[in-house]
Length: 279
Image (cartoon, rainbow, N blue to C red; front, top):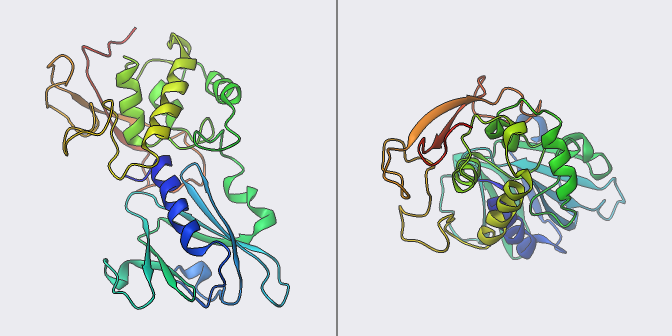
């Protein structure tokens, strides 16, 4: 599942292929941007911001307004990079964006969101985000202050809210709470050491940002054993053997405008009732 570490890797991949290169062709397959043509423009930067990806292009030889192609991977999205002429590894009907240079093609498959806007107006799509756990401007104090601003909110919903800290998705929320022995429905006010919680989240994303296979169990692990509780409902807890509980949590207070899988904010969360008791 794409989260902040995935987007960081995607940005690095696209940066190597596109940064400083002139786009010879663009094909944007979202209705709102389908008529846009970025050919002739140079890609100046590729920037991850939480779970959002920003591809910035200049004004081209005509000196037009610099633009940003903003994408969100949602649940299934992924950018691939291919040498020109190489067959894609996913079906063409899943492609939502194609950016082609003289040497490479960057193809965005099953993107959850695709917008094109003036670079000067990027705050319209990412300005609501809290401190980025993998960003160069990470601000621990600001993240803690935002979490503390709603003390009665369940901690599982609070750390998933991208307005508080950007980059945590459903995998990391379950894993971080397990490692800190926090029940998902613990009110933020009752979290004994919120600083340690935030520090752990940042550390986990950092150690996984360059890994092909995400792991939260202390290092690279064999396939199927990389996570403590996420997706392991009814299976034995790796720490105590108690069956892992799968519950649902209302994330309805998440950021307005953030893409999601359906009309409901009701999402799964996994935890061990013995290792993570309610206070």
